[in-house]
Length: 456
Image 1 (cartoon, rainbow, N blue to C red):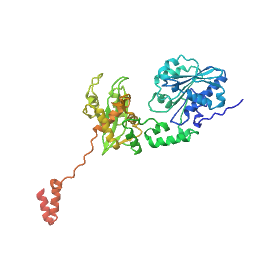
Image 2: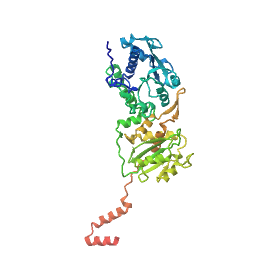
Image 3: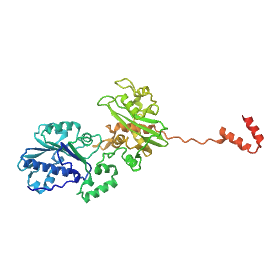
Image 4: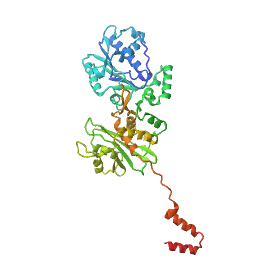
């Protein structure tokens, strides 16, 4: 029996060792994860073909309008990189299959063709590349199609959002039958120098996106986002760190209102303290479709009770909820909180909040551990654009707008502390007494006592 030498990044060896239902890797550019997984699909195809098995290797992506958008070329390149693999496969312009015809590759876009996947039989392996945007609905339909006892799902992606369906399903899961690792450029033993020059150039010139593109971090700022540069500066200046609340100052909780029901807008809160000329963001909360009692319960769980915290609401906080016929203002007041409602700024209110936030950002500090969700929203909040006409249409209303609106409300409400003027000694009682004492310096002790007695 002859043996073939397979070169993989060392961190991937445990991923492909032993039994598993799901294997995968996530991380940034230059990690060799796509090329490595493409090669391993071909090796599996070779093994199944040699064992007399028949079936399909399905390669999917969320968006695939044509084969040009698929993993076809990666598969071809991976097979051709190993002469012993190339000798076993037949490669055409639009197909790849073993020469004995037992194993063939199929390519599909999950956004449009997920239902057709159900009709495919004997899927031995499904590899989903660029899997970050794949929806939970697609995963729920795809996974049951892997019906063979030893069928496997392979997943590779560059993370964008912690709350993405792919990230929640695969990265944070605790399943012994799931083997998934983080893989970045430094884990690639064959990382080319030309690509390293591109990496260093991005690090110097595109710091907003560098961590996501090359280090596999979540997208903290979206290109064109309103607060992209502000967040980058806050991180560079050390204003995203550990911040403890000042026990002698009240906490102000700034809200953006949601509703009840699965399709309602999210309810968001930023608890903060105004300390001198700084805004210190202590925490962030967001929930969708929950009643007011749930939000109040969270406030109590964090120690933000009515004795320590006040509530600030946008102008519609006075409006009654359509289902419960009670306003957020009256609900918070009934729970014992002091409530301030910010008046409506009229047309252009969203822009005013954005400009206020940009103006205040250099004075804002974030508690790193507890505000990550809110900072993600700020980093994503961006303008909706008409690409055909090249014009802006105002803030895009999506998942990020609720936390960003609450943040903007906080910045609108901020008032710079006033510096107290020193009292004029000529117009104060303290000045009068000082004048008396200075005058008395010229009197003897008896005269001084008599003078003070007369003043009394």
